[in-house]
Every structure is written in structure tokens, then in C-alpha cells.
Image (cartoon, rainbow, N blue to C red; front, side, top):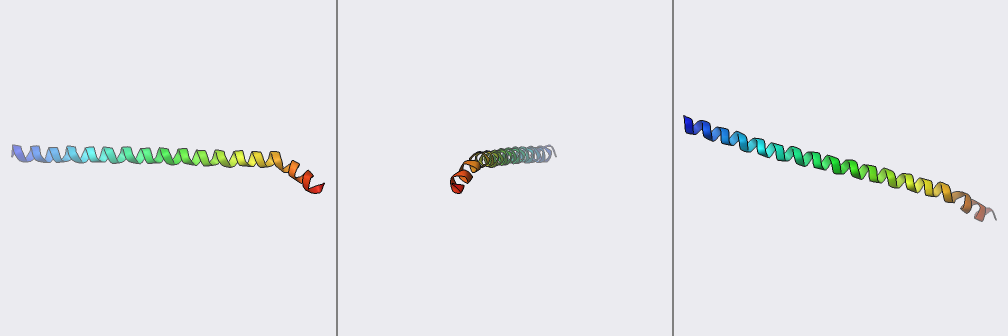
Length: 64
């Protein structure tokens, strides 16, 4: 019986390691997604600011 229990325990440990690795991978992917989202939001904000800053100049150029 002892060998069977050892085997199943080892199997559980192996499964737990795999699960832990999968969770860690999932967390990493989520972090990367959040970082990418923040980056894209920042880019959009910067573009909006730049456009707002330059639109008056382009308007005056077009009007004149």
C-alpha cells in the first residue's frame, strides 16, 4: 500500500507544480495585457493632446 500512496502523492505534487506554473503564466499574461492597455491609453492621450495643441495652428493656416 505504501508504494501506491507514495506514487499518488508524487502525482498530486506534480499536478500542483503544473497548476502553479499555469497560474504564474496566467498572472504574467494578465500583467502584460494590463501594461499594453495602459501603454495604448497613454499613446491615445498623447495623440489627443498633440492634436489639440496643433489643431488651432492648422485651422489658422487653412483660414489664411
